[in-house]
Image (cartoon, rainbow, N blue to C red):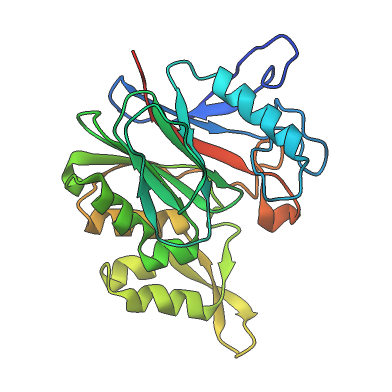
Length: 274
């Protein structure tokens, strides 16, 4: 379980920021946080620390929340935001001092102190990675489509480190208690051939009496288990987190499946400067 924290800024956005620090043995120069839904200035249904610019919230309000996040993270100078499309593209954050524009991708890697990357979620799985030596870090947005099509494989490859030299933390996502999927999703993962059939089958539990339009059984998917299988096949065995459910924790997490119109949380990782 990740640890919780707060930041005080005397009534400004971020004054009651509820966030988590991943519980993993990352090197001291690695910073990582996951925001919750409180401590910002967004109004319902985005209340209150919404960081997504694409969900219908007031742009100026989201900007205030993002500035509060930056103020709360000393040692972070540049933060790469992504235009996520449920794909598998991974970008690398180039070293330098030039400001970072938002880029279309679902994952990013970085290696310069002071740089960070954030992924936005509200049920999809955020995955943070770093090398054991603390020289490289990455974050990936892994909904089931991106997970199936290889976003984690592409992210590990982009670090230019073998999987055995990396560790991963699985952030808050929809849990196996709430993630009902159709037979086509299970079939696609089983046919992907990226892990043993038996191991991947364990990530899907049939739902008795629940069928899709073709009469096939639906399943409850454990996206955490599916991600672990993919990471382990890449040689990443130091895997942490993966024990939360965004749908069940309405007071703490945004959830698209639960609420429809809602905000987005940020899972971010950075290399501390100094």
